[in-house]
Image (cartoon, rainbow, N blue to C red; front, side, top):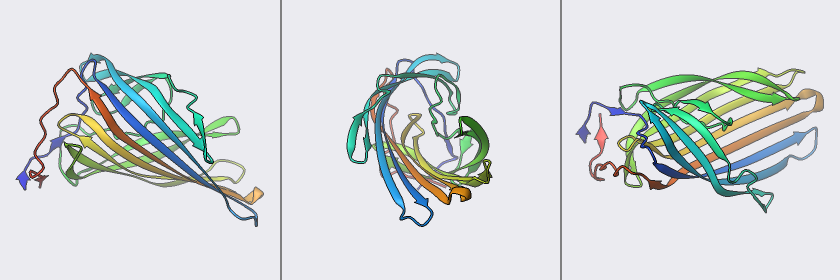
Length: 247
């Protein structure tokens, strides 16, 4: 193994660069009501998005996210994506932190620590999430735990594998209704090129309403993969497959 002092996790945005990603979101919901048999529904949404860097200022980049296509499948029926063509304007630090967005996209990417990061290193980030309830919103706090678990290769990139764990949080949202959420995920980040290669996030939520003898269990899987790169900057050379960095 090739010894290393660590890797630096940061986005290396280039003015005019466009990265194309495909995201597939699968939602499975199980509804249980009193003594009735569970009712299960499954939906899938596919989104193709171009992310173009339109401005750079220091470590900050303005990125336009253009939804260029996709579809929604509900109970076996294919529908057009209603928000195809929409452009979401965002501002992002090189750490991955979004400081501004024209629409709340729910983007769930890790925010990286500064400096060199070794395999096994863990860090945390606290985030708040709004839950819509009866035309109102309730704020809950989530603790995101990140761990750089290994370095490997994907699609000719040397990638840092970042595991994501959000321990389950349960809150009473009123009228004795309990809402629970937990998140698990994994991001593969090309640390030399400074871009995300793929991401998988699984969110489990449960809503229990004792007064109605009703419970809703929902699992959402979101898989995102880099499809195409159009950049004015030549690709950063990657390490050949037989070189694996370890500690």
